[in-house]
Length: 288
Figure (cartoon, helix red, strand yellow):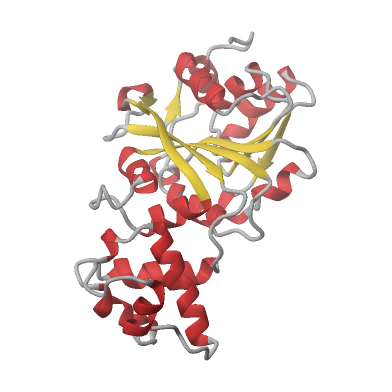
């Protein structure tokens, strides 16, 4: 769908905007592509959408044109606020602009009681992983959002969706993401679609929060995966020594072969290790 606003290239020129590498910015001018991303976050008729790093508002316009009931954008680059204000004027009452650094914002608080809610964004690449990790570690779970539709560099997208079958990409991020969400890559976006074009292909990734992930404490799961993947070439009986608990006992309680390496363990195995670690630190006797 199209709106009656000026072409985005003209808006950028009128406001003297250029993408800043220091902010991880790459602008999307392709209306077909921004519409495709917006549709991937649909249906939007009654939805509140949080968008991080909208820049001059290409995806913002697509979300509104595709029918999003309410869009909240978080933008730290004050150069872009005037362009976003023009969009807000075109869609009265439907666009809320938050001038802030997304790393300092709890997106759940931005939507209030409005449901359904989701996050859809071409994330600034320099903070994309940090933002996603923060959202995945949030408590309580499930979050207020029923879906995350996010753009990442292809390498990061593959790390988010990886399984032990793809050992090179499988790591802490994949365990955390797939513990709490069902993940999949929706489609690739060529570098030529951006201004300026990055040196890599990008991907749009969907993460759907699981209403009841396997029970364990998020901080302990992060601790276990950090130890395991921090020395990923070593067997778990060695790498897990960093936890300060007898690795043999943890592995036995979790039903995991001590000669395995981190990249061979499914999410369920890491959850079992996190639960065993919690029990061990509580002074409980672990089953052998």
